[in-house]
Length: 170
Ligand SMILES: [Fe+2]
Image (cartoon, rainbow, N blue to C red; front, side, top):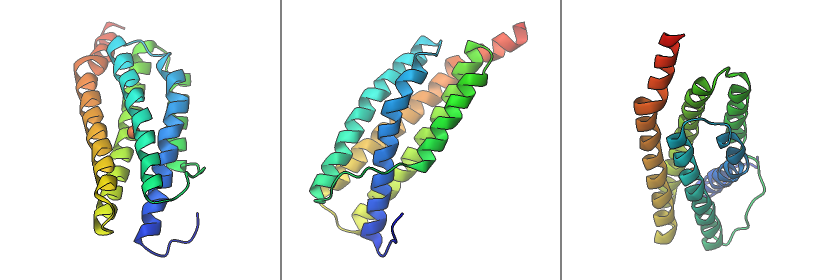
């Protein structure tokens, strides 16, 4: 990481991180989703992958508006979060536990994204950036908040209940 001297450099550092985070999800999640059992969870995650492609494009538009190049940089937080999913998939010994582990890990990912996009939106407003930049960040933040709610509902209604029933039956 380069030295950060002011808020615009801090903004750019977060933007590079979240750009890498979206790209890493696009690369790894399709492989993970194929291993899940719950069809509603699979559909939700596939819908979210489509939204993630849009998030990636929105960040590229922000780089363009700021006349900055896209950065090849790896976000270590997302690397760690995805690595944890990989381990959970390996060690979950039945499909229902696997779905529950996956949904909990995805909640970790979406909270990280909400925090980062929220920070970017606040920095962009403080720095009086172009309204288009703020609008792009708000649109993605709204998507991430919606996804968090959808995951929460699915976890409560389906995935965790099934694990509980399964555990009682065993
Ligand atoms: Fe995203």
